[in-house]
Length: 65
Length: 408
Image (cartoon, rainbow over the protein chains, first blue to last red):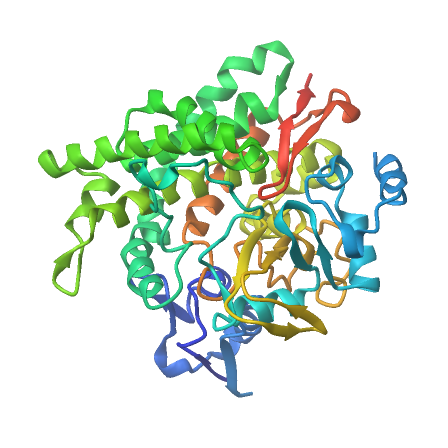
């Protein structure tokens, strides 16, 4: 699975970071960025889906299942 | 209580064309009203309080919040403020509350100024003192077997945390609370209360900012003074407005959320038990309580004539951003009126959505989590003393204001 944060949509709610801290990092302003080029280890796939489902801005997309 | 409120809802008022967000029935129990509106007229209209439109569906709130071209944040209060004659000659006339009261481009740099100071990393150092504060508040009433969870607890927490962040004396906390209530709770309907409170708060903050210019310290005001925008220091009146925002937005909002959470838990022993047995559930539970009891309704005003959802909105018309109603929309949330602490899919917009997402959301979450944890640690079993005696504030910010509880 591969994910990506659409930077122009992220408003720094930090919901993704809380549910999937291994998949995202926050910059000084609180905006989220995917780590490791967005590659999701198999055991983190459920957390990735939770991050997508809980983002109020719909800013996280799944690029590859 | 719900039955009584439903009877009020069925009264004369046509909520679709004549809503009044200060109607006691609405303040006490707005949920059936929102359900009715979402079904019948998802963007309602009223002539009360300066006339406004009010969307109640999640999809509409989302779309409007994202459309900053048509919907401006130059006015954000749910009711217009009447200025007394000669107001423009008063000091601090025109001081707003950036970035919440700004549109881009001012909004962009103004928000950037604030965000680093409210990140998860920035608020975490305040956790321990918040915990200590909660413990000391509980110490004062634990032996009485009863307390007012709003007045003696929830209300006491945010103003002290904000005072500590700003670096002003903790003794100011009660004064802050009084000013903020006069500004947002009482003052929206009574300009004669609002004006003096606003002036007193601005005078105080102005003195504090001037003091930090001379004597910089390790606090938020000093750090904001160090900031530069395009190589220039931030204008004094802008900083003053930002400090005003920090106080006004950070106090009764969070205390309302803490109060609503304790009100819910007082009536749901099974949820209390869950949080005691599974403390790791707390961050998720806080999101669910925020969704179910979202305190804040903001406003936008129209930049131009524009038809939205079949509604002919005119330039300067007010639109009430009913985020609390969006968060109870059954089209978005399964079983929305049920509090499900382990809810997995919860993209709530209690902190708004779009460029004006609450800058203090991490601070609010931290205060909610710590205050609920500490309450349940000391008072795992409690109930409302008299459910009908609970009073609520509403309008811009909804939350319990009298919340007597008893515990063994």
